[in-house]
Image 1 (tube, one colour):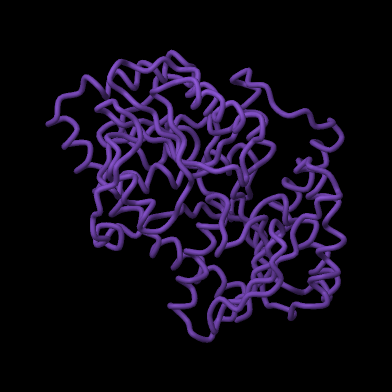
Image 2 (cartoon, rainbow, N blue to C red):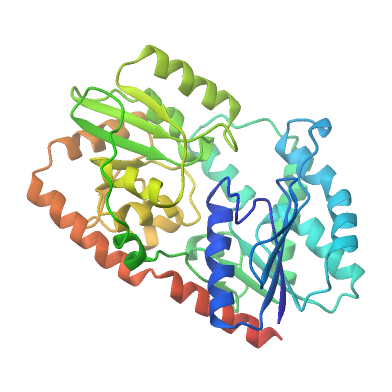
Length: 385
């Protein structure tokens, strides 16, 4: 079975949860079946060819800076270049798996070039349409994108969901809102709890002079609600540490974070890291806060639970389907006041209550295994071919 994954990220140089999630799935598939061959077409980076394993190859044909800095414009204008690159470098697969709207123009064109008989799978890793709806509902200013372009993205997204041989959503709400067919699938992401718990704990010293350390990690992005988090007034004795880098960040928000970190002694930014280092930083925090406005699944939330660190979260989107108020502190809204209230709830929470939400978090992780997600993908591919 030969599978082509198309996504706007790299599984082995991930800038967001998209790349990380695809890495988990393709590595898991390779373990299940050593006859599987996987090619990944990375539409973000421009690193050429990488043979990741005997079964997995990555072809990177990402953005050209001369096309401008606008993400939407870059995505649409680069498609012809990426299609030509793929025709010249890739083998015809049995399945093309497109990961979100950014991969549709390239995926559909390649399928047509190769005869139109290739089975297609579409996953709504991130819906641009739903994200804009959620930001608008919260009266959050979004980057200006011309309405005809937004309409075209919505058309691409909804048509691909209906036309693909199989459509996958990360949560039931997205499936309902986007009109997913009856036979479409909801396959959540997951966590390798045992692997994380087996990581030797190395005590990390987080910056700041205050006793309580609250951590945010992930992209510095509008949909993550980080601007309101930065505007929130922290209780005395609390440091907010933001673990995130400039790559993949909203430039305006990143600049605001950098400026505020220079002005405030209770706000600190540290570089984003991955692997064992990341998990040990999560463990070193007293609490993680994840106040997203739009979240298809929310890997940050499940990773925090697996590390045994208390979590404050907004419970939006996919998080609402695996989190509960026994394993996390639920924000009662998405505004600054709700963030402040949730932080104060954690600060005043007795130790025995914190221990209980940690234990309940482990139980949630046991039910959200990557192995389940990988197996469902494998069974779906087998039926298609």
